[in-house]
Image: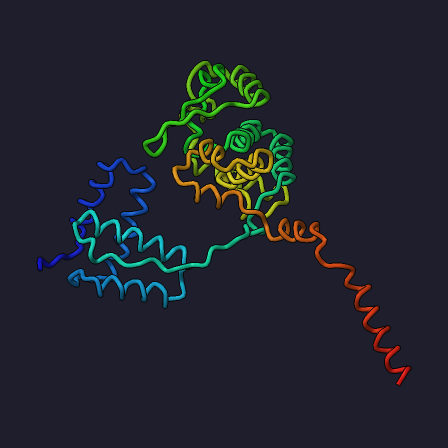
Length: 302
């Protein structure tokens, strides 16, 4: 059997393969970063199935990573092995029992969403207020914000190219009118609506930073306030009205409907309210009182 070693050169070759596969820039960076981590662990050893299994156990036992993070690392290694024609060395992911409920601490509510917008407006940051509403009312990813152009707003639809797919999103009427007025006031005559003073599309890192600062001003937990959470809020709001997960998957641009299910998980509190509304516990206090009275009656007759 031919011996295989992971080297800086092989990682760079892997990067080129990912680019040829038309993986997104962030995906390429993530896979390469994960492989550098494996490279440090392997430390010049010949790659084998046992080495990959040992790496899996190493990640589990450090106590530094969540299971989801470990599986993400392993997915990168498995993909590397597959493209390097060593699929027989791939390892299994760690099985995790599916969590039925969304984490309430991380779930942005509609009230908090509205509070963020009001706070941005009161601070004079009209641009940020519109960015939040654009993300929240269309469900687009932050990386797709550059597709919100004046031309598309005037048409009322935008064609989003992402991950090798094309999908069309519609602008709500009120958002469309607000964006057109904003462009007119700021002298934007073509191209992306959300731009810097120099005319370049806004950087996602800058938007993230602005949102974190806004969350503090609004008195909302900063861990809840980030661009992708607006997409989750859109998904839950859409599903609560339509109850059509297949249509929602199309709107969000998901090729796997299981991904969409993650977006529309109800919180534990919502599920508890549903259980309470079923009224399957019949007058528990009344029953206990009846049992106590019956026991007292039994004793009095003996």
